Image (cartoon, rainbow, N blue to C red; front, side, top):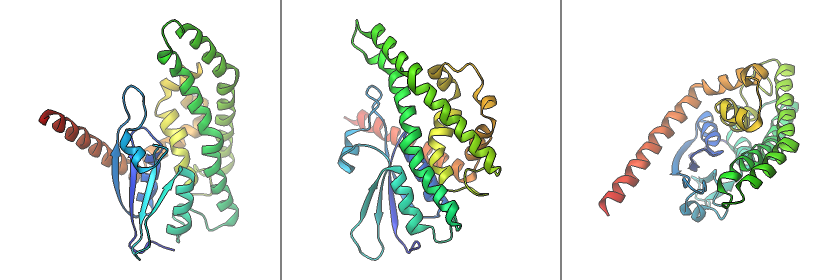
Length: 259
């Protein structure tokens, strides 16, 4: 089913996996709006308003309002959202593939990104932040334990996955993960690879203890990340959200000042 006037509302949280869904909505040319939420600076969680949208309090959440009068649909989980949009709103294979083998590869990356890669990065992040939130008197012990977990398991696994993805790009030899164009595989990997790693290289090197320049260690992933960052529609949605976040912050400040 192609787009027939359906409208979309993306519940977008800063520094979350929602930005790639926004990128996909723009790539597919869908009629969308965005609701902005900002993380709590102390807990790093989304605000209570996001729990009113979905019990998980997570983002992205995508609402679809059907033009034919059917009840609206609320979708959670990035891979599931992307798969739904591919199945129902990409009849011309803008970010999907007409070749069945390539479609299977896209589906694989939708599951791989969330099922294998992302949890490694989240675990490393949590372990690295744990010492700062540990109770006084336990900070040194917490630092020792979490550093041991990262060094003993997560960093090794993360490097294996970075090497795997680097090889995938070398073998495909088109600059993309599947076929010879940007697909949903590139969209879903934009968060764990471009945003989490190459747009935060210094932070990743600190967490992983990597002494090498990551742009030189993984040149194909670095070039792919540059291609994502400079895609006109990625630039467009980033600029849109910068403006929306600034507007949101201004509205909050004005509201507090009136009280």
